[in-house]
Structure formats: structure tokens, C-alpha cells
Image (tube, rainbow, N blue to C red; front, side, top):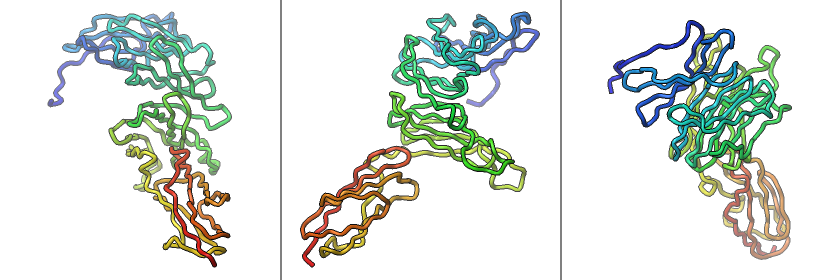
Length: 352
């Protein structure tokens, strides 16, 4: 491929027209969704055009729903001949399934989310389910729909928390769902910096259970824009503050590779100040966990094998009786692995 322009085409009314999304079909056609102001007395209406891929000829045009409306995204549904579509219709978000001719198979309108509500992201899983996300009234969330247009589950973020929006959704290599977007920074900041947006990332199970979420950024507006999946992890694309020049604050493109590490492969081990693993009864022994700086432990629980336990990153314990003891640590990591048992440490306690 040389990048040589093969064709270009224009169409529309004398008024405002926009193409917002593009999807290729197996039939040498393009589904182009957007909005049009063809009839000024009706206002902005969603539009769907079918174009020939060989020359850009407009084969068919459809207006979508009661104004104001628009078609924001169209994506193929794996394993089916249909295409998922999201947008707004009369101030309400909708999800629909289309065929390659633009005929509507079903349409689900989110009547239970009040204005302002917008669906901003559409993702179709390999199992043929439809994930959508965006702004739901004065909160934000993610919904999963089946192939009949029924909502299977919803994950909502409470309105009393930081305000934000979901911009992209994707399946990770280990089967989890990842959501990317932005949230207003909950961190204390000077008055001139309050209200800045942070990049936001969250992980969910395929059943919609929230596993973890995090926001990261500086004092200026930053926004997650896209997620890409690789066999070993995720690639996060965002707008992030410029830190490397003397120019006024402005966003730069930022790329971050997130590697998926199974819980049993996390490089962590229990350590003690008794390298020989032999000590006399009645003497205090220190225990701690050696963890790489890329990981953050939320909680470490210790079981000393003598009926006593403790919690903390570094603990001391005194064994009062001679014998053999198995010291077991259980770790809870910040971004996954809520309960990770570590290999036990075997100690021999001798008489004083």
C-alpha cells in the first residue's frame, strides 16, 4: 500500500451535516453514521448512509429517529451478520442492531436514565455481547446487552464520587474488561487548579463486578482516549500534561504499556531477619514481604502457625515454645489479586 488517494466523496444538505462513524461490511460497502440538518423545521436528525467502497457512491440514505438525534458509533458484532449502533434520540441514548442494509433489527432506548445522558463508547465482545458506556444522567457507567437488546448488567459510579466519563472499553488478554476515560481529580489542589481532569482506568469482571480503578495525572486537564489489547497486556493512549519543555501547560500524546501478570507469577517473597530459619524460643523475629516497586500492597495478613496472627507490611513475633512452625502471608494487591497466598516459610524454634 502506498497511501495514494483512490477516491473521495462529499454529500449532504445545504445545512449542517456530519459523519461521525464508519464501519466496513463484507459486501464492499461502508456504513457511515452521523447527523444531518436536511429539514430545518425538524432540527438535527441522525443519519445513516451506505456507500460503495470502490468509488464512494452513496447507495442509500436513512434518517434516524425523532429529532434531535444522531448516530455516534457503529461496530460489527462478532459471530453474527449484524452491526451494533449507539447514539441519541430525542435526548435519550439508544443501542440498536442493524443489518448491512441499515435495517433495524432491534432498538433499546435508555428511558430510565434522565437528561443529560450520552453513550460515548461501543465495544462488541468476542462472545457477541455489546458493551456500552458513557454518561448516565448525573453519574457515569457501563452496560452489557445481549443479542436481543436486553440489558444484562450495569456498573454505575455513584454521583457523590468524582465526576467522570467512560471513553473506551476493551477485553484484556486474561478475559477481564477494562474501561478508560477521565474523572475530575479528587486530590486537594490550589483554587486555580481545581476541577482538572485525570486519566481514569478501571477493571471489571465479565459479570460487571468492579475489581479496581485508579486515576492518575497532574494539575492540568488529562484524558484517556483509547485502549488497545495485546497478547501480553494493554496499551493505553492518553492526553497528558507536557513536562519536558518550557512551553505553557498543554497536553501531549502519552503511551503506556500495561503488562498482564497472573497472580501466581507476581515476583514476591516472604523474608525474615533469621536467614538460617532457626532461632531460640522467646526471641523476637521480624518478617516482611519483598515486593517490586511496580506493585502496591493494600493489606498483608500473617499467620504464624501457633494460633496467632498479625497484619502489616513488617511485623515481629515471638515463638514461646520449641517446634516447627509454618509462617503464611496473604497479600492483597491494589490493582488485582485481592487475595494472594504466598509460599509458607518454615521455621525451626529451639529451646532457649
